Amino acid sequence: MAERFEIRIAGSGGQGVILATELIGQAITYHEEGLYVVQSQAYGPEARGGKSKAEVVISREPIDYPKVIAPSLQVILTQAAADEFAPDTLPGGRIVYDDFFVTDIPGMNTGCGEGHGNIDARIYSLPIVRTARDKLGREIVTNMVALGCVGRVLELEKIASPDSFRKVIAAHFPVKKIADLNISAFDAGYEEFRNCPMPD
Amino acid sequence: MAERFEIRIAGSGGQGVILATELIGQAITYHEEGLYVVQSQAYGPEARGGKSKAEVVISREPIDYPKVIAPSLQVILTQAAADEFAPDTLPGGRIVYDDFFVTDIPGMNTGCGEGHGNIDARIYSLPIVRTARDKLGREIVTNMVALGCVGRVLELEKIASPDSFRKVIAAHFPVKKIADLNISAFDAGYEEFRNCPMPD
Image 1 (cartoon, rainbow over the protein chains, first blue to last red):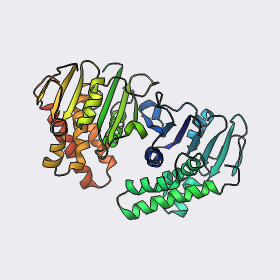
Image 2: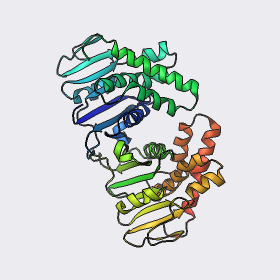
Image 3: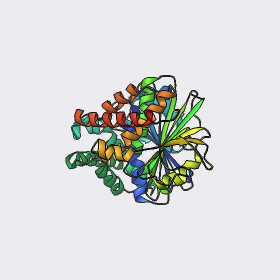
Image 4: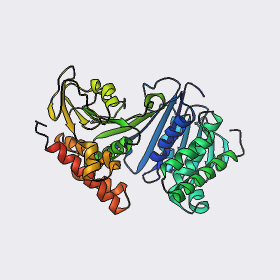
């Protein structure tokens, strides 16, 4: 990875984006002791209108400025979040949109492809909410499907392994049946991203 | 409150300090729509050695720098955290120590009193862990007792009401019996601080 790698997950309240980013922090620490990680989220006016975002900054050096400046990776679960946050993306970075709630992607119709319009990023439109709802049978695991996409990207970037994620998810949910459901959702998101027919 | 009010809760892993600070963010937003709040925590080398800290920055203006600089309030649950973090406290701020795990307080033996030595702060030594363990019967609610102390301070500062805290705690725990236990722990911490015989 570069010196600094920033991740934002954005959606609406109740989609569990805060927990997802906390588990990113834990998984990285589990996998690689040398990286600095700060996880944060805003409340109050910045989080108004039902929007919810949570961020992770990963760095080889101590993190003096823990807010995201230009995210290397964004996972965006609602149209409102897409409209507001997509333009921030680091040039050459990645945006993963949920294909059910984000239907108006500038310059792109569906599937996976290079960015168009004024956003210079690799763009993925994947069934995150639909996978949670239809494949796992529980929309509440939307955040874990999103986390699976993050898990694949961090594997490509050699920042954390999928197994680190599975371990911290298992540790977070003390009831085994619930842990297993969440790990299955993570795995489904991981596979969605991995099978996307474009260069990672 | 002043323009900016910073809170840090510090202890060891497993004491639930991250959840406590998230609930602070939620309670403030519930109580008062006009304040900006950012909650954050570090993972990786900054969180090594079993230490765990989580922070909240509250401001009347959008928060550009979300890290704590000099906390107005610290709740400190272990000796290691006391040794490391107490000196950061904002002059004239408050430090609440757990009286079971923090036994070596510079210049002070026990109870509540003005700060001594080189720390200019109002110092409180309160039975946080002991209240969770002995009064509530569950050491796992240590973080909610700590949150009760924070709740009392934020009431004094007119930043959030105890009822806002009770509401967000209730919303966080879907099982009513568990929610009630956590609210009782919050109330116990709130009373511990309120009954402390020194000016707030």
